[in-house]
Image (cartoon, rainbow, N blue to C red; front, side):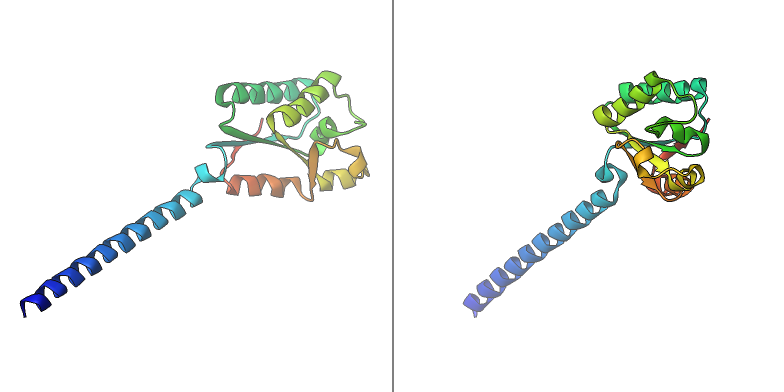
Length: 163
């Protein structure tokens, strides 16, 4: 009878230990799932999308200066996107029909190439201008509706900046 008690006690300890391990594993798994769902696991902690809808040189300069400031402040801790539509799409054009300075064109391409700034061109605006994909710089991607791209990025946690 004494031996049975010792065996029962050992079984209870073993089962208790297994339960503790399983509970801890479940806790760790739930923490891992929560971390995976958090914005930090989805990329940089800071996300910002700029609306670029005018071809005015001062306007473009302000946006590019703001992006430069964000890149300087946050370095690799920021994801930046620019959605260009309306007259602003000309800054992403290979042959813009509005006056866009060569400096602005170089800066925006350099931001995409060197810093991963995402450039998005509005397909609706392109249709209105009778532009095909060859009229947009290769660093940019085309979205059917620029406003929808803005909305989708906001739903992914991007802060929306418009002037």
